[in-house]
Length: 201
Ligand code: G3D
Image: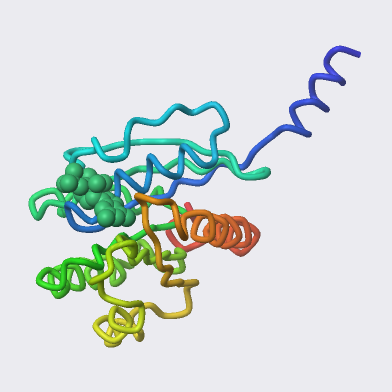
């Protein structure tokens, strides 16, 4: 009886786990986004003060539960020398959140190059990509149409995968829930699709 009940309990509360990479240049707001996400989705999480966050060096991790999905985030450093490590994590990932600093027009072509390199990786084929146009709380920031125009020649490389550009402020939280909920929908749907080539052993 105990085994039956414990099995039933486990079945009812079982969560499917998904690894989500948070990528983007240094200073884009990746760590702030992760902290904001943890604060919003984990009821008892007491986050650090968002204004005290410093740029990602190495790796930050975090987990949230949304419905029956458990998202495990890996926030990777965005400095040029750390970007070469991103692809070591691709094979494990179910989704990518790519964070752009909408206030940094000077580095727009640099972030586009890093984005292009990432989306052309075969290992990430079919993996949903959420592009966060971050820092939209800053009045002088680039708008979504500005960013989409700057990234327009990436469209063909995105292919058939799910991709959404979401306006966001990691600092105030605007757009964060919408982005996460979209990602959950995509990864849950993908798990019921035939496996990607890399998953076939
Ligand atoms: P990173 O992890 O991508 O390197 P961080 O970036 O999360 O460390 O953020 C870099 C800087 O951008 C931080 O400011 C942080 O407060 C700021 N920032 C992040 N998201 C937003 C946002 O949505 N709006 C605004 N206005 N600022 C944001 P400092 O001053 O500590 O460098």
